[in-house]
Length: 394
Image 1 (cartoon, one colour):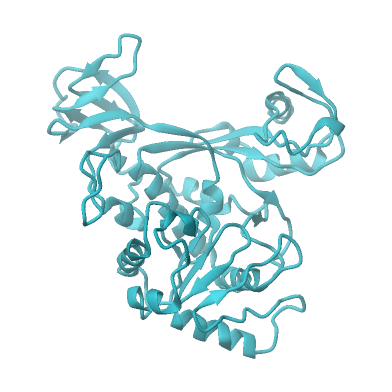
Image 2 (tube, rainbow, N blue to C red; image 1 turned 135 degrees about the horizontal axis):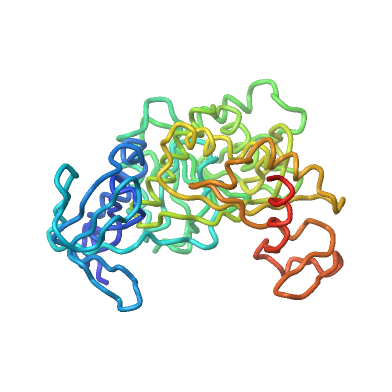
């Protein structure tokens, strides 16, 4: 695949998802702008918007035993009703004009729930290769961000992917976005960088009375740099994250969740196995880093959107559950009150219980005791355990 001077690619991509089809099929025909437009709520199609649709004049890979490629398919109520033939009367018809359609892709290990919980208007920078491309992505994102709102990009990128092998400076961020605060936050702990408007706001926070006894000063440098935090004990980048999380409302989280789903479907990813993060129950704390989320509240925006009929991807969730009692009283109440029966219905599925359960379970057909549960088992999964819990709950 070649990249032109304007950043576009010379071959078709899978970045156009036909959300209205509602049958987890992805169309490979989008422009590079889809990466930006897919981050706005307007790009997310409601599954209930158009349940019946026919795709015609395409190359539709059925993935059956004969690897059949059909020219048409009919979807009714979110399910494939017919492959081949003419479009039924009364069904909305989409002319693919020769485009390729593949079944929706399943991401088997991802942290999309974390993405949905990040504060600000998250901007995808994983696909950028230079600071100039970072500036272009931020400037494009600015067009959809209301005045006064933060433009952010947290995790998922590293300066080594950029030709300059460094963070953008405050001046370079100002050139891209002069009128919205910007925060780029690297990895779990930082370091981070902000623009002039962001520095002004952080400086004012540092000058005011501390909002928490453990909060450290952000201390933005003249070039916009913010020092990294540690995995414990806090630090400047963690303090910046803490203040942005304090500003975040539940509606912000719902909007970020829609953004995450829209970006996912723009790439043809229509189902995720989310592997969660480090469980951190309780109120926000300035020592928490990007990988710390309250496991009791991190799914609230997803569940709310599911009840509203606004989800466009399927989500399977694994759990990291710190509990030493083999009877799992805490986990059972969590499933009963937060996920049951949502874990048993589409688009939500309960996955498996994490490696911190603290008692013997079966993994790969072999019994493993608590002493053997180490960081080497990072798939977070012991498949038989949740099935036992589900049976007791039903």
